Length: 347
Image (cartoon, rainbow, N blue to C red; front, side):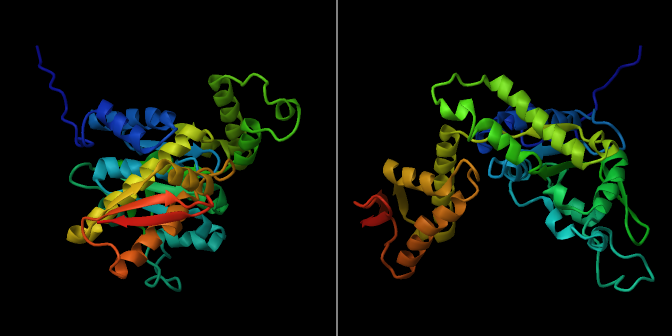
């Protein structure tokens, strides 16, 4: 009897499936369904069971702005490759005109500008965003609904046959890629569904809240309805999973504030080295950052800019002026008027 030997996986993905799920869920706050749908495709690749002649996975991420769609792809790059910037990102807002799409594949030989416009999607660039830890390349088409129709037609072959023919007649293979498409389609309707501003539910605050599964199904229907109105069926059918992101609640937003402050603390240690100091942000100060940097309409999108203005820039000015000695402790607290932060240095 023949002995069947299991095929060795080509990518370890920085640990097993459960560990990958835990790491991704910890980095993307309030959206556990995203990790639950993405990780199984990575596991198929690790096991050598991913379909041939197709990308490992194609995902459409829907939902209101500031809910973590782009952050999910960055977090996955961090988990798989150790760097959140190690992905190939195409901003579809730059390809709204039909002629601009040629920049993706390059002009064919003989056309004006053939040598001056190298293609954005090449085999070399795909390989450059993989790593020794994981051979998967992450490709992000951000805000796909803004792209010209010719980009959607161009992506048909990529999503179906994992192949893209460039202007110089060479081919790019996408078998070892995870492709993410983000979109705000249906976001306004989703926001109204979760936070109605008129009607019985808006007038009666004590009305019974809808169950989470019911709300999730409703948002899924809203999102898919908008997607089917925008894209042709043959494009939608090539997507492996459509993931609808929920508007973030107060607890999730507070978690994101804590997460971003931790990122700033790590940044201070890494960049300043021996000149580093300890930053302590009390609860009242965190509440101010939460109030200024988050909203029901934009989620956590403004949070990084708020922390930059309220913490990073004042700390940078104090450091440049020699006001913070090495190993000092800087307390960030709310001032008496409750509208600004006060930074106090304790040596």
